[in-house]
Length: 212
Image 1 (cartoon, rainbow, N blue to C red):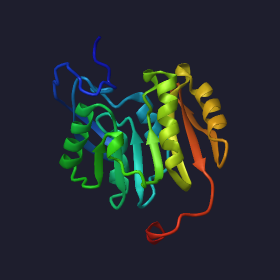
Image 2 (cartoon, rainbow, N blue to C red):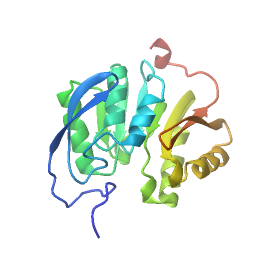
Image 3 (cartoon, rainbow, N blue to C red):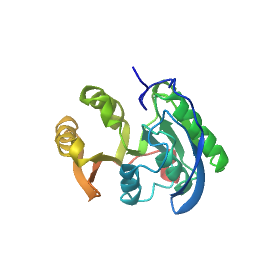
């Protein structure tokens, strides 16, 4: 069986390459490689997400689910240098690339990790994700059921999904699954993609984040 971008340890040749992209209005050069998601360009769905979400909050913990080589996590880290950005993936090659790219860009607030490396008491001021749709519905639903409940109160998650890969059915599932204390709506549509917004309602957060 061949590698997928969601393989934990790709066996294909790494084939490092450099890519010029614009992240958070900053022109940068990043390193990508074979065996990760969209190594040759900024994926169209990721581009739609970055263009149709508000600037990240000033601080707190942020999460990028399925980070790949890191465009979403790196963008949030550029926008919010005082935040702690968790770049989550199962693909060790992708995580190595995120670490390399964060170091090259001078971003010390990016933590490229697997799920078990995120402390269980961390809650997120925002989640931004181009989720791994091709892992299949059961695995995707399990992934979202794990992380969406860790949105802080009065915080938002944004997920980009291609329309012909089931964005509308996923929205209905999210609306039903996270009905208690959450709301899900279509935030934007562009280039054949939907950006879905999930909001966790409740009292404003208290503690150190109030000082940000």
